[in-house]
Image (cartoon, rainbow, N blue to C red; front, side, top):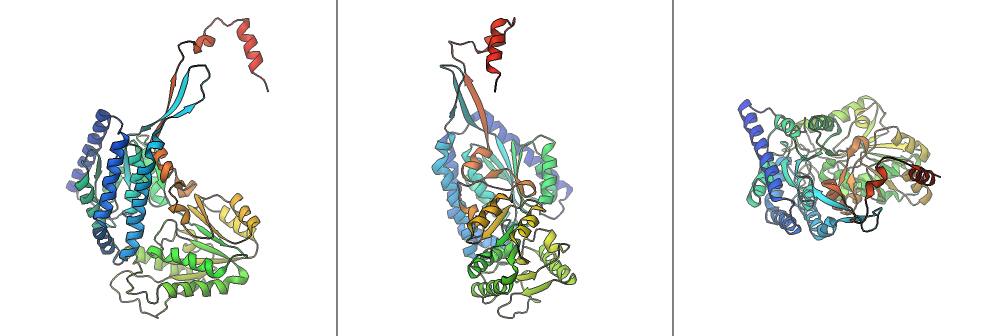
Length: 483
């Protein structure tokens, strides 16, 4: 039911389920008894989270490296520590403004209408394995700034990170505030069925269907942060060298194991060779060697390694030309970790797995085109992606692509950068997700916008509704029901 695998023993599962129910009920009781957290409380909790990121940064990098087989300390500090701290600080610095009630227009003199932002209560957070700390602690900025408590279920695919996360949270928070529960697919299944006040899941579209179905049993609202096949459109007007370098930077970051990674690229037919050469050169510049390069991330486990190599074999079998980027001509058959070098797949057919499934790895299909409408029609014929990327200097064409496609977000002349802007909502649409967070969008997602109306003592608003209805009412209705 999640990205996780493994079977719980009956006793362990029963113990885990019992604990999850107890933690949820204790948090709900604390929420109801203590009432909404003050701004000071929320800032204190965010400060505690920031402190954990700073104090445990070395252990975080070590834990992620152990789980992946290899991932550089710097990559983890950027993606799983620094960016989290920025999200938490942004929420801390803005939550007082976000919490202020908004005055609405009232129909009568002296009446008052406002929207107040009320915490939902207890939020369940199911985080994935690809950025285990980022995709747990960054959403907490919205959850906590909105005044909620939280129960976290991290991925079993990163057990060292999950165990560290559990210890970190326990060192700074009481279980009635924030708690972590660990376990495999059976625990995740039970977690998704708990009666939370909101449930946030980050993972695959296929798994999200099960999550949403389980949450629906208790009418628990969900935010689904998914993925899909995010396309890149390289215009005829684009600077090919720059576009290729930016695309391959993100395609090789975390070995492409990113929901926002470019999934396939459309390149003008006449510029295919130039793009391939530029992409190959950019990888060689970043990674002169790959096999034991400390800066190159391993595939998370054998299951996903086999999935990715299976995509390549399937594409080859169906006639796709593949280009392996291997600057030092290394032999990858014998290795300590699951290292997979970047592979370009030229014009794979639509029936290949690599064009049907979200890749989540360092494989990059490249499709050629002659007219931009070919690209737009291709994108629109498929499920809406989490992101769309456009490279080019043709403002009219850029506008055409924006106006005639739909995606969760867009970055122009770069890849993934929109996700780093805290004040931009981050989320998908259709198959790529439901709801959004980051910045104020996260505060709103995890808040109940409660309407409060105070009637003026001078006016009986409901007098118009009181029978008997006479000529005065008929004249009034005749006057106001008009074009």
